[in-house]
Image 1 (tube, rainbow, N blue to C red):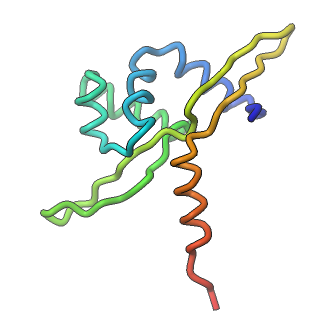
Image 2 (image 1 turned 30 degrees about the vertical axis):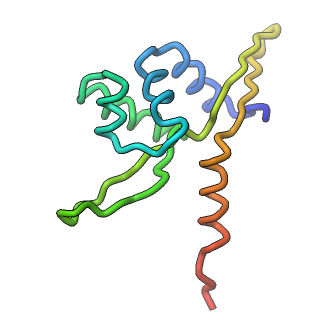
Length: 120
């Protein structure tokens, strides 16, 4: 798919330019992970990890894939990337970004949508 929105294009370019954001995207691409798992596996500091996970969520490059309840009753969000790969091309005065959606995430969003209860 071709990314149309300028805001999303800028977010993708910023993520590709930041090695810590790349590490976070890599860790959360194939399996949903908690923030702590992402931070541990990507080897970024806690404060940086939480800030960058928040940035990725705000820019729609990461989504909450699941919410689990821990044994002690706390909610734990599991995150996953929205996109799997990017191909960036610059043409005169225009950045063209082709992106491949993460089908596991797309499948989850679709399943959630089609299992919404009827409002009667």
